[in-house]
Image (cartoon, rainbow, N blue to C red):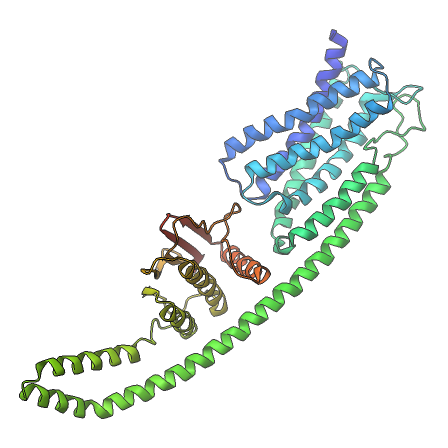
Length: 461
């Protein structure tokens, strides 16, 4: 590579790198990441380098007619576009703490929108087309250096504006409700648009030096994006209806639980009244047995009386009526499945978390704990429930026994289910995650082999 070619390569490479790195930088700041910011920036720089190097060389060699522009070469050039997107998907999967298909929509917007300042400014000032339509790169000189720097600054400024917009869009939580199938339909449509697009922003009709009539194929790309946005809105609307049905089912379940708890409390009051009414007779019976020397019978009678009292007193677990009702219902299932339990709840008065949200969290966690215990072949199954206020967060922790070889966490950090209705389970987990996000909380799922620990922390103030 001679010095003139090196000059062209370097300034085209730097400009393309700036464009690429800004996109990676915005992605690092728009979503939660798995690694530190520093590692994310370094990794982003590495990934952002791959396309500019190949792209700059291909434009120079093909544009400079060093390589003949055949159909095969054009096909390879188009493949570079898909390689660019594939590299971004790899980065999203490696760095972001969220599945790639829930974030890839933003890269589509960024790649499309960030191309405009590059096309309108850089290509207009530093490129021309020869009589055969080949893209020709100008040399970077001291005279053109100020323009070059200004274009770089404009790209960075444009990226800053898009970063602010991406943070605003990130708050639109309905995007995370769209199903995987809907996302793949959207991306299949985008793939077809990219396949038919030349991604060439130079006009083929104007061969004058520095001429730029318009952005080639831009109407097709913009119409495609508009169609994809419409499909996205339809998918959000569909997801909203599904979530609404699930939430209505939860509300119905809450009403049924409250009614069942009301009946249980009535029965408890009746049993307590009966026990209070008969307590004198019980004491006299025990006294007669002791006086007659029937100590064994007296002991058995006393134990039965204590067990009866415990059965009556068992209904109350905490001062929150909804959670008390949920626990009463779920722990009945534990009794039927021979699962022992230890309950230690401290739910403060005036908690700012909605009762229906608390109900959803406890129901989901307890359902998964009970399911895990029921699948365990061991007889000594147990569930430990503990809740308390920790600083500004209300913590709910449930530990349960499990079969050692059964992994209850899938590759996405979610509960694995063996239920027949996996769709309802999926929406239940999605609602749980939405609640965690709504209260700026976090979850921690730990598979310890013979037992499993799930903790959810919700901001309470």
